[in-house]
Image (cartoon, rainbow, N blue to C red; front, top):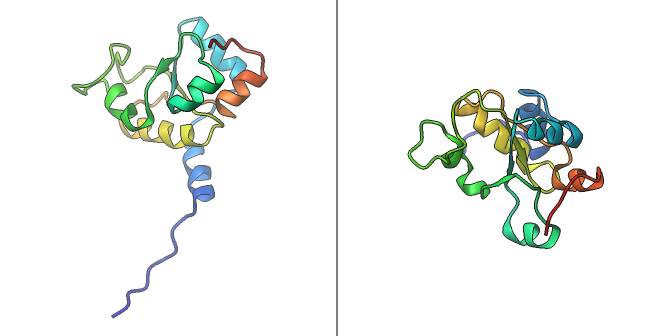
Length: 133
């Protein structure tokens, strides 16, 4: 017996759908928000990319597979910066794709101000914003 299933959304459709759920930020806006203490930048790039391209000063580095556990304000494995559900988190991946899915996941945990950086780390660097080795 073969069951008919509806086709599922591909990754492009999924990205489009999750991105409609929040307002993404550009690099300079994220930089200003972090400098003024209004946002927590969270770098989810894997270690090889961080080693190759450098780090954003002041950004919290959390591996993608640990993100929800570290930022859930009610979680037993949260980082000290995970102070509450009103925390504005800007998730940064390499090019702005994985970070969109990560931000949507944080929304499901009640972090309603979570967003991601359009273009990711590469956009940050292209904007001439600070990077350290």
